[in-house]
Length: 400
Picture 1: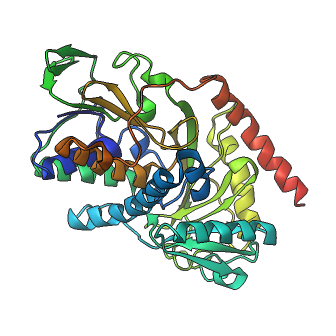
Picture 2: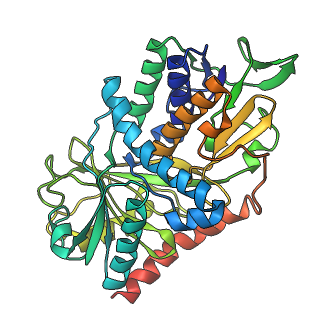
């Protein structure tokens, strides 16, 4: 089996395929985790971006939708299990993830969301104002919900740890090996690289938002590519006692799906993924809104300026749900995690490996489909980037 891309999807596929006894070769254009897998905010939980479990069931039908929701819950539990089983040094903190509401109306929506996830096996607790204050030292929130099958980790270390586990299991992981083309040769496929070629019976293209247009025509048109900045503070408090006494990451939903929140890493630095921004990409401009909101929520923390920033990229599907594409005979591609890739990509990698080992497509949480293109592929990300920050400022003005 040939796997193109050494992110969470490709490496989880490789690891689980080797455990199933399959021969595995991974070709990575750079290094493991170089793309979105190493450039995110390091939180995972069972959740959909912009959708509830009931909306997923409405989209796929009750039976298939319920299966996909349950898969999401199981994928979130797989992440810490893999880290523990393979002794991956990823700064794992399975402390849960908290979603908070600023008013009673938002809290009602969150309670309904928690109940929906409970119906699919997730462990979710509802919290009132005082309960939230045990995790987040502010009186800015009316309450929230705590996902227990969740937490935070070092995203790049997790990707590299999966690569090491796959290699120890007998998989071959080749770095600096971009695939220049893929051609059929009888019942096999041949991948060309600058230094040679690889022949394989099955191919999994696991590049998500970093698809090479020359690898498979039109694959890069099957998702919206949205750059997202990540911000990192100086060391604020190694234990987080000033504002996160339990170290629990949190997020507040904003109008238009924007988020404020973040996590503390093990050194005491505050890390947050902020809204996309159309225009200047300097650190101070990107972080101005998040810094202002931080000071509103945590006035007790000494003022600071952002120490560093980097960019990740979201691969967003048409409906923000993951896709498995059947590109040709025994050639598959996966993308469209839409910001929830740590757990979903890990889980889909295992599912792909099981499907290829058994030949049973029912191992997958969603049926493979023919390749499709999203409409207005370049326009939609631009609109999101152009509207995100004005929406955030407008919402803050409404709240005074």
